[in-house]
Image (cartoon, rainbow, N blue to C red; front, top):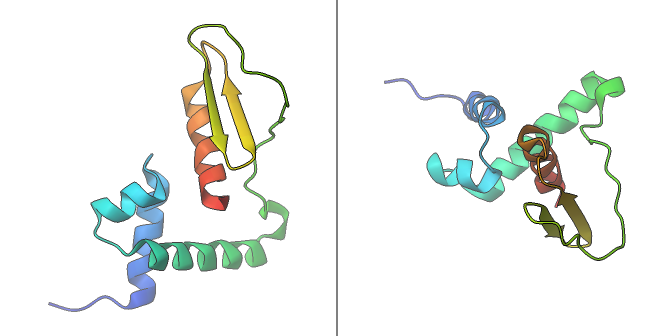
Length: 108
């Protein structure tokens, strides 16, 4: 049985992670990977992609932060990430929210 080179190993896992809807933590637990090592290689891959494609260097989604009390309407959701608050009203697009959370999670 041949061993994979470390670069190929991490590239395979980064691509597989990007195809899942899992958080980085959940992906690492599922695949028995060291979280800090995964973060390191993911960061290096993103840096390389930014260098190779500077016009697509940002993966941020537009977001407005409003400093107001949470809405009292039922069915909504309010999330706190350090100083970031994300509110989604009833009927929100869960795919868009998942992408937003993945982006915020990668930065926090």
